[in-house]
Amino acid sequence: MTSSLLTTERGEPSKSTPPPPALPLAATAVAAVLATTALTALTAVSVSRVLPGSGTPVILGAVVVAAAVLVLLKPATRAVRSARAAATAWGQERRTDARRAASEAREDAWTTLGWCLAALVLLGVVWFLCTNDRAVQRTFFDGKVIGISFGETASAFGTNLFIAVVAQVLILAWGLALALARMAPGRAGRPLRLLATTYIDGFRAVPAIIIIYLIGFGLPLAEVPFLSSLSPVWFAILALTLTYGAYVAEVFRAGIESVAPGQSAAARSLGLSRSATLRHVVLPQATRRVVPPLLNDFISLQKDTALVNVIGTIDAFNQSKIFASNHFNLSSVTVVAGLFVLITIPQARLVDRLVAREQRRGKGA
Image 1: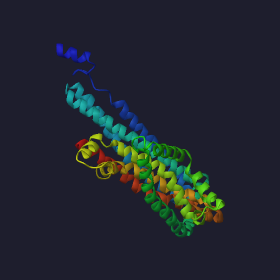
Image 2: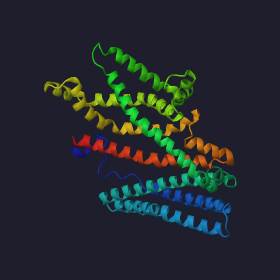
Image 3: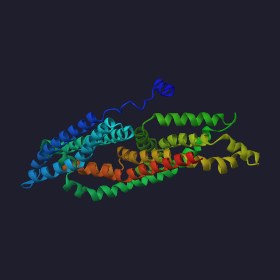
Image 4: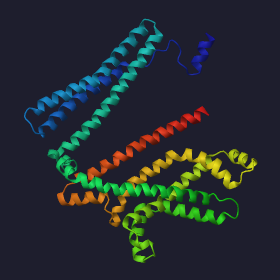
């Protein structure tokens, strides 16, 4: 008795406390399914009316409504059954079964509500594409314009890839040099630290498009020896290297500082010089830790290669704008967006896997 009272005073539910009622939530899930099904039917009929072909409204509407009912109603009805089973089990003094059934009912109900929300978002997208007699679809997803522009746009996209790959190699070297300069030890390294900090802060504060514009047009106007004779592609590579080098420098610095000081102390005690310690002990560990954030920066770099169109580089975006102005249609720009998605999303998933692996490694340690 005393133990039961103490448990209640701590705020924990006693064995006689009934589980939270799940039937109202399950009923809400069923109502959401019915509302989503009705909206799906209305949207299917509205969409099918603007599509070619006789009998399309009836067929398409029936198929979509049936699919919505099958997908959404199953977990909702399961939630109702579990909620009723929980109430019945509680009335029969089967406390464990009642709590288990109530938990299953709530999980099924929330699952149903989540799918209903996703369906509503999808319905909104479909409605947006088909509104105003499919004006949005014709403007951004015209199959004829996509077919005409895809070949040349994809070929011009090779320029974006070339800029990104070359810039990444240069950025790695330049960013590491900046990081080491900012971490130069002692009073002798103070001027390097000051210069590196000023550079990093300055280039991180200025938008990349301004740097590209200044270098792409400024160097030819200033007639700087050798640099002024570069092509627009190399102007873009130089500008992106200078800009992203500042970001990557901070990534490298964070990785180097994350290595335990005892690692460097142990290496120095074994007779390794400061540079040898940095090269053989610190940098290998720091590099493994900074791979995910580096890939994130390079994903941003790949997207920013579209900014090089401001200096006249014929990249995918510039090529798509030519088609857009000739056809008075933006479907060619959609092709560019799709190409960037194709190379960016796999890298994003790779970053997630690397982060997860690093977390597992940290837990294992």
